[in-house]
Length: 158
Image (cartoon, rainbow, N blue to C red; front, side, top):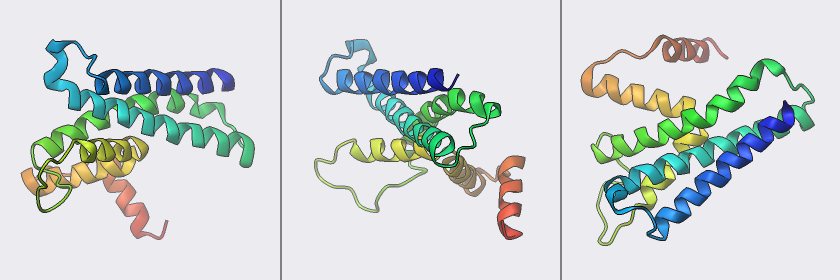
């Protein structure tokens, strides 16, 4: 199963990189052009999630030598959660609920969108906590139980 996980992660990275290159070269079918930036954010975040998982494989299998089969599902689902967080990062930036900088630049590109998407994919937990914080501040929506329990653990000296 260990090698299957590695192949899966490398395959997802390859697919995501190819998708980004295809979109960057203008080869995306015309009808999908309105969602090009959102799709690129999703695939960029997926690469971030795969990088995080590949690092976890290396650390847990080779460095710490504590590979645990209970985590196999995590290795398969984490990049998909990263993909979704990339789309969410695009939505929150586009809606103006997250801001990259205080002033706008002439000729600015989408690089900031992609950078945030990569970070969102790389660190899903903190990104979701940030989004929950924004939702609480903007709409008064309480944080989820998992976010609240994580905050309680940190307060108790985790």
